[in-house]
Length: 166
Image (cartoon, rainbow, N blue to C red):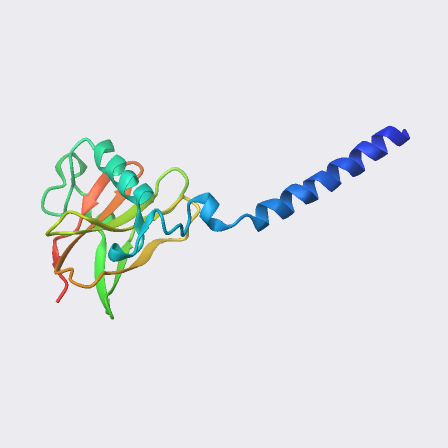
């Protein structure tokens, strides 16, 4: 092996180390995470990305929402698509959808909205690599009623019955 190839390999390894170090040292705010300019602490830290992502999830569904009472074209799918909502206490809501989680077929998001204002209160996204579709949301003070959604990559947007917080 020639010396020039050894030097090039060494230089490449050195450069990869520099890139890795820079990547790890970049503040999260540069990636749009935790940036006070985009986070809105009044609604649990939901930022503009979350709001736009929820809008896209809603627009992607042929019908606005499916439910246990109205599964429409997805008759028989409600049991594995409608999210279960549990009030844990201290303003925390657990959301779980008992659904397979494979790359081909999975729950790709849970989100929660204020039933009175329509404001997005939280969003959790999943991939087919997640073990289950389970998350917790912390509700902001003053929220009285919520609507919880579960989105399937094959069977669209499902909604649980509206829940009173108190």
